[in-house]
Amino acid sequence: MAKKQRKSSAGKLRIIGGQWRSRFLQVADLPGLRPTTDRVRETLFNWLQNDVAGANCLDLFAGSGALGFEAASRGAASVVMLEQQNQAVKILTENIHLLKAEHVQVLQCNAISWLSSKPSTVFDIVFIDPPFDSDYLQQACELLENQQCLSENACVYLEMNRKHDLPELPQNWNVVREKKAGQVSYYLVRRNFVIK
Image (cartoon, rainbow, N blue to C red):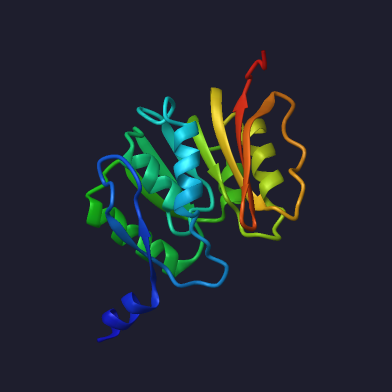
């Protein structure tokens, strides 16, 4: 009975493309948890269509796992999801088992602390969609660069409240795409990208 109540209180997330296209996943019902919308994800993965296959991906504030699962579905070699809240981690873990997604792992930790510990993996794509009204976005960008967590031409996705300005980014990062949708501004940034 308790299990049924939990499921009914949680939302659903639809994977848009790739091997798990149209699969629905549970989403934890937690305050402030906002899965990236279908429309935004579709735009983002159109931008990334030549980059995802074979990439090592990091979903820094995973929440629902919308971005990480979408990347895994579209051929990413590995996806690491970082999430702090117990209920979200539990449901992310259940979804990994449901999909038999052996190349996806979830770590329960604070994303900023984890980056500060200088992880050994180098990532090709990083998704940064922190809680609104936090200052994590700028901290995460600085740590990714300073801790040498990124491959030479890594892509970084940034999602934030459209009321706020994009924070100062590392010098060798260039915004290559940007859009707004509803309350959200979102950006695709590339390292060491020469704008012609």
